[in-house]
Image (cartoon, rainbow, N blue to C red):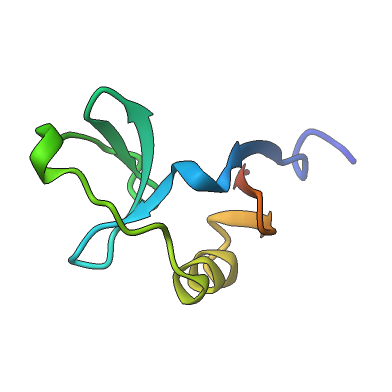
Length: 82
């Protein structure tokens, strides 16, 4: 692989991925700080506002199709960046 085609992959535990009620996939960094997986923008939530629904299989499939993630399984989601 040359530097033009190399991709950076970052494995993150699947339990840190949540789905907001509006369908946005968020990564939990703790203490109310979450990151939109698609836009990479950070969002701060009050504890009572934090999403509690783990990311769905269909959302992960869409992120995989869109090239946002490289792969996933029951324990890990692997983010990719070109």
